[in-house]
Amino acid sequence: MRGARRYTRGLSLVAALALVLAACGGTENEDATGAEEEAGTDDAEDPDADDADEGAADGDAEGETVDAAGWEPDGDVEFIIPFGPGGGFDAYSRQVVEAAQQFLPDGVRIEVANVEGAGGAVGAQTLRRADPDGLTIGLVYDVGLAVAQTIDDAAEIQLNEDFSWIAGITQEPYTLFATADSGITSIEELGGQELRFGALGAASPMFVVGVILGETLGFDNQWVTAYGGAGDLLSGATRGDIDLSALEVSSIAQYVEAGDLVPLLVLGEEPSAVFPDVPTVQDVDGLDSPVLSMRPIGAPAGVPQEALDYWEDIFLQAMATEELAAWSEESGRTVAASDAAETQQRVDGAIELMAGFGDQVREQYELVAE
Image (cartoon, rainbow, N blue to C red; front, side, top):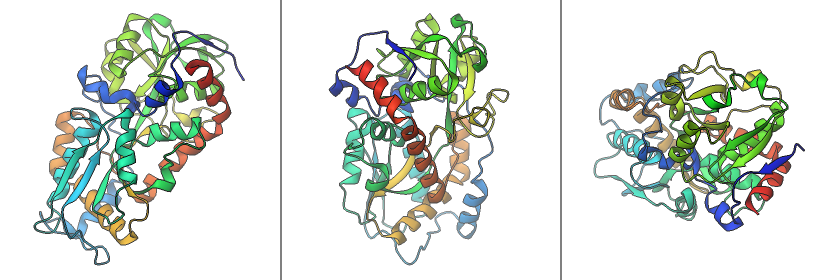
């Protein structure tokens, strides 16, 4: 285990766990500073676009409903958003739900509900405890919950036990970046160094990313964890408070363009359209899975398969509509649909990647959160 030094004041265990879901991370803070997804976007071709188009082939007409094994909602549907109004989860949810509404039976409405608290944990608890009748669905902050499972094997919420997956809305990879003041320009320069790594607490996705990359690329972390959100972290990065951190591609694009940040490694499987010359996980031994911000739509465990199939068809059609494509282009928020099977695969990959470094993550967590 490589050494690590506590760089800023530690977090109490309770406080750290309360931050466990604050990422795309605590990026639900992002829109306050315009940091998230406004400036840049990863336009890489969506590998699921053809599948989504095929799913929509029989329902191209506006307002046509989908029949999945005869199941359809017999009343209004609640769609839970696990963060408050104004952030990325809220924006994506409302646009996708609006696009989906045209495919529902007459008289059925999807009502969105912002159930915020504990960095997305309250919304996740609300969804997992809902009746499994297909009438309560919503977004799940999967990356944050995977972190929680990594830190604590007995975490109350278990992704694959508590939720069934319907579809994913985005596939935006996290990106390791260096600050201009650090002088670092490539991952080859990291080995053997002790570097200040910025994170939104000791239970945030970028903290786990820092642990994993420290192990695989051979650098030691001085943890800087006193940031309340991605906007705060990016402000600290431009001041030179840190050397490294990791956020979504779109969160850092404008800072890279301005010369404040240097992208070092895209944690996706394919080159980024925004940073086409930056290495990916395929170029690093020991990184077997991408780290993506997927914003998956889920349902409580136990929902009948025919209801899950119905909602998968509905949302894949919604994400293939012209109006959603227009919103995506105008807002700079990438829509890259994944079906239920790929969403499950991505969730499994995130859990397995983090679990593979579980001992190191827990050790570093105890050092910083004590």
